Length: 334
Image 1 (cartoon, rainbow, N blue to C red):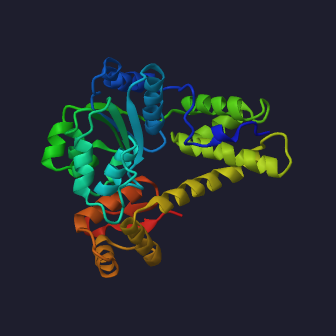
Image 2: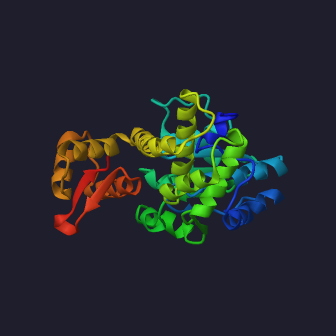
């Protein structure tokens, strides 16, 4: 049944995209100066999870790579690279300048000096989940390097800008903004049809079943594609030639749980501590949560930072908040 498992992975970047022509054209216009050997414009991509931000960013850079011989590019996920040093290391790694850098002993200033000395071709850096970064001053570091251009990906513009200091915010004010809305059911169906065409046998699933998957995914392509993949895997394990309605019904919660578990695994040390405290308490109000966090954490973050973490946990459907002000409580979404 499965002819190419790669295309059933939500992170797979296809050779063609659907329903994001306007967003892709806008981003391509921001990157276009690179075709003349000049730095691109800074671009900000905003929108909820599963709406194609990362896919379009990578796709646009891949297109550019096919037409422009002399430029560098790197993709950096700020979930994993959330410190200034980690990000600078990845930036230098993208141009082969990190081999003699030691993570434990090399001072950050040495990385900055090396980056400032960069005089190569235009360099595009995609910073995904940039609102996860714990030291956004690194954006100022990158902005000051003439040949470096940034594509910044975040969920919400307001939440990103509240984390920026004035130097960074003022420089990003004129950046190209590209907002992504949730997919409609028909759009998700056509995306799934592509994945079926590329990765499954033609008669493995019906259009009506794809519509059911798309409707349940609520505009999130990751959930839709993960559900399709899980149902297909279960069908193969059971020796079936077609995906049944029962397999889809079974796959939907499994796909959601898989996405949730992967997100939990990506949390930083302090975010995971906040998540675990909420999980242990079952239900907890903000003041009590911060007091417990402060008691347990080594080098605890500020209360404002913890509020940012809570918004992020809610956004990724790991935690839900109920009530307002002092009556607000947080609980884990299971």
